[in-house]
Length: 110
Image (cartoon, rainbow, N blue to C red):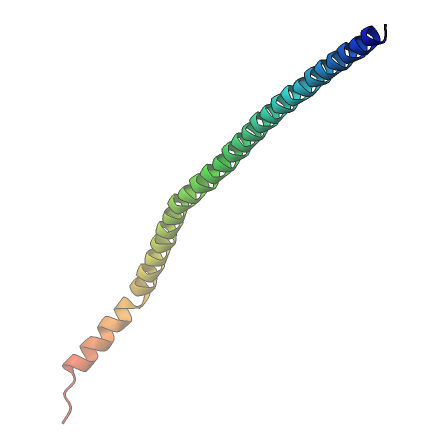
């Protein structure tokens, strides 16, 4: 009877060991699955962040390119305004300059 009882105890221990091994394997599988899921989530988040930063960069680049065109247009307008101003000023004093030049050219000094 005692041999039967010892044999039964060994069977219980083996069954418990197998059950423990299944629990450990299930835990390892769950851990690996969770790590894989976490890695995928991190890669997705990194890709979204990268796309967001790239979009911001492209937006700023477009703004600066647009500013470049706007700057060129603004500079052309300022240049045209200055040229008109200088022409107006020149036309106001051109008669005086011509008279002064004629006076100095036609006068004779000894």
